[in-house]
Image: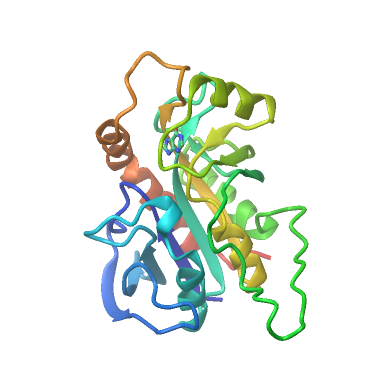
Length: 248
Ligand code: HPA
């Protein structure tokens, strides 16, 4: 197995990653948001990709998710953890809370969301009943337990188009739809990984109370600050994940 981490807002670099190689493969869908970095995290080999690119920030609806997944596949990654900054849809999901979602609802539109171009007469109807890899989710949760980090063991990841944040009424709808956390980058990344046959799970970090639920104004600066303040916990969790035996 070969690990990859896709970092999001506030995770421009994987803290503690010693980079040993960079690759930027050309794929049928173009190149990834940024050269892929292969490095060692606490002695374990891992590929790292910032999905928004860096230093230029590609917004969620303009990310070339196909190139990102295809590039990770091209370098041999088999297990991908996507780290997502999210809003909490319940007041007890305080900033800094970690969630390993078990379900998602996709509200995105207009993104290149499939590798299936219908070109070769081969239909790609993936089974997406369980959108995240069960073994990888379990491995993330086991890593959190070993590291003694609080982490919600399930949740519904609601994925709107953005890039604007939600209205208060939209947040009420996401809650009625069963959503627990809301973030803009979880799809089509998860579905593309499944299409490519790669194990994929999401690790969400709550960085704000969703619109209308908290008192503080919603600013990107405050969200980044929360993520940066908690990046160390994400690093410890991921280092524990990589150090453990291969998930089943
Ligand atoms: N809504 C959507 N995306 C987000 C949020 C939010 O409240 N916080 C971080 N990403």
